[in-house]
Image (cartoon, rainbow, N blue to C red):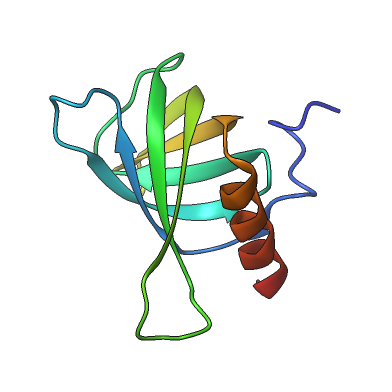
Length: 113
């Protein structure tokens, strides 16, 4: 099964997210609703077109509640759909490039869910 469509590996989350499609354009802010090691779903009030490459920043929980902990990586938007009931766009994002340190942090955060 394709990792981008395999929902068994994704876990429910509510981490703040920012998607940067172009450094000269303000980020699109949203919230993750499902996260896995290779894909995630972000809800945002603005659409990012399918096929767009972007830089993703996730604000993950920290052991020390006073310290902010972020994960950043590049990804591709595999699908984007308007959810009418909540007037938000659902973006399925495939992780493209992530450093080994950032991947370790993501795996730790997933284990904590």
